[in-house]
Amino acid sequence: MKQNIAIIMGGFSSEYGISLKSGQVVFEQLPKDLYNAYCIHITKDKWVYVHAENKEFPVNMSDFSVQTEDQIIHFDCVFNAIHGAPGEDGFMQAYFDLLKLPHTSCDMYQAALTFNKRDCLNVLKAYDIPTAVSYPLNKKDAVYPKEIIDRVGLPCFVKANRSGSSFGVTKVHKIENLQAAIDTAFEQDDELIIEAFLEGTEVTVGVLNYKGKVIVLPITEIISENDFFDYEAKYLGKSDEITPARISKVQEKNVSKMAKSIYEVLNMKGFSRSEFIFKGDVPYFIEMNTVPGLTKESILPKQAACAGISLSELFSNAIEMAVAKND
Image 1 (cartoon, rainbow, N blue to C red):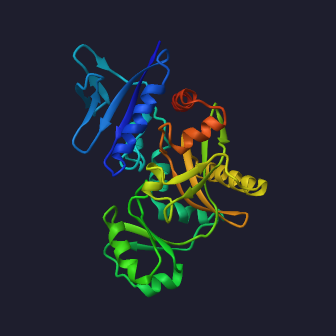
Image 2: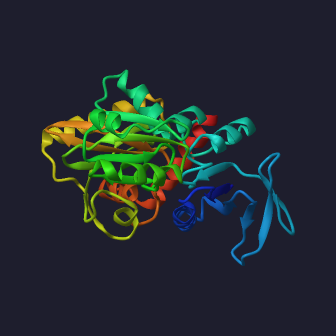
Image 3: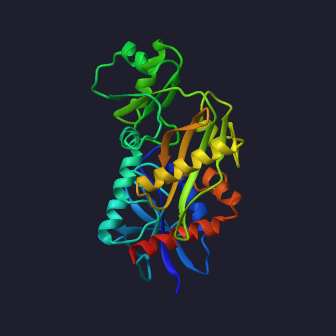
């Protein structure tokens, strides 16, 4: 019997449009002989099943079922394709856990932790994971530019603490530009993190539970045409993403080991894609994405393809692992 799969997409953040693209690819690539797939759009205003004919049927939030014109649909598993809130910050994970409904992303605590850049870095420092020097700032805090720059140096990055796709991120070269960057970050979040600039090769590493075993996918090297790997570089073709990365065997071994260790230390499930910058042969951890982009042009699907894993296999495995976790 086919399983009913709800593909949740959209969300509350600036990544709404990207999420819709990811969700649509999942819908198209899930094997039709195994699954009945349903596109569920989630916004602040409504949760609805969007039928192919653009008809909308509301989701019953008490049990996450959908009543259409002729049936009530109950789901066997949820495929999470929401980037940012509420799909990547722990809220949807907690909701589905309460309903005992399997979902493809990590658990609630892990989602909340990794979505909070500052907290995630602090946890990993206890495991001797190298990270950039940083300075936290909240919206009501007084800003002391000299104190900040004395700690992190120039250039530096000002980042919204809980945001993705490089929204709210600015690279600051001069101290007089620091306040404008802080204001930009606060448009996305009321917490931010200011980090030292690390000069070196940037890579991103996909890790997932594939057929019951934690595997590290081929590594991708990031070369941005812009000043850093910003939104344009990620989504508008302003970068080269080279898989496998042009790094030494020592660097490959070190970053693969670290990415897998972080996945296991944090007790992750589902997909993860972590960013690193090399200083010599040492990878410095930047951040982790637990609902990475899933379009054909996205990095993790390209890494999977390089490993001989098709989109259909990648997405089906995510569902199989989620259902197995709940058995």
